Image (tube, rainbow, N blue to C red; front, top):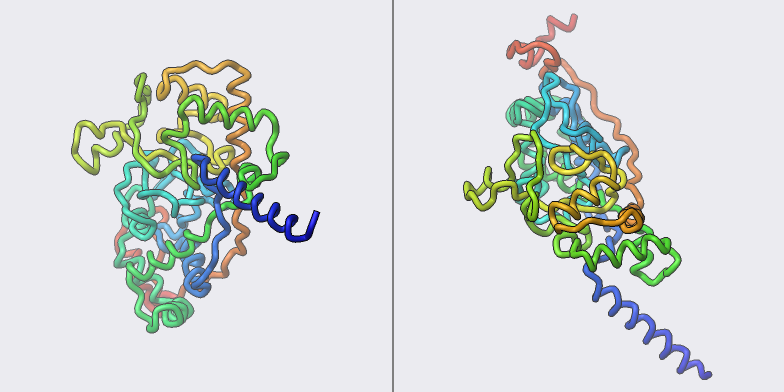
Length: 344
């Protein structure tokens, strides 16, 4: 075999592999390329910043914990003054692949989403004005804003822009299934391969497709049979006002799904086995055998990718101009800047 022939065969193999990947309904997650490192670093600081909440205790990471798959692993999140949140907290990992943010899609992108919890009385319980005042009170933060945006001004748009830029880096490439798509046949088990074929043949891919294996469309929860829940959330109807959108939610990503329990918008199901059987029943009108369930779960587990490796940021200290946290009291005076006299 000549050297030229070997090269031709190699190139043909590359094209064949690329064609095979493009024919699949699931796309490979690619590692992120950071183009604005200083903005990402500022966004990371703000993502972990508890002083964006009225209590001085809740940060973005509280509900989207990067140590636990970007979720808080609770049926519904805990908000300001220990209030119970209305819905399960979706993962922040790979969230930039979503067509919109929140279960009902009310935020068009990650920046719009980042602004919501800060001013939500059931979540971080603050206001945008006080949040920006808090951050602007610290010289180190003002210096970061100046470096990123050209001047020290702290606005809610800049604040949420930085957070969303950081969140866009939270992708999980190199899952066993991605390696399989790229041609490494032994990257996943025989059961996982069978589970993927079931995933396609049963119709799961009609909703769960693309790089995030979901997040590209809205779908009614309980398409074939009703989904019974005590959760008050009604889905897209809250955004559109259309009766047809009642119980229609954004299709969640299945990336890292083994880490992001409990499942569904009400957080009512704690195991993948039960979640798979429930979805087959109410969305597809099918009953899976024990073997099919095992295979489907094996496939889903293979979607867990490399988790973001985060070095915790060191946050600037508060000072006499920083609004005091109000973790227990409703007294609005406690959120006003502290006088120098009170610190003596």
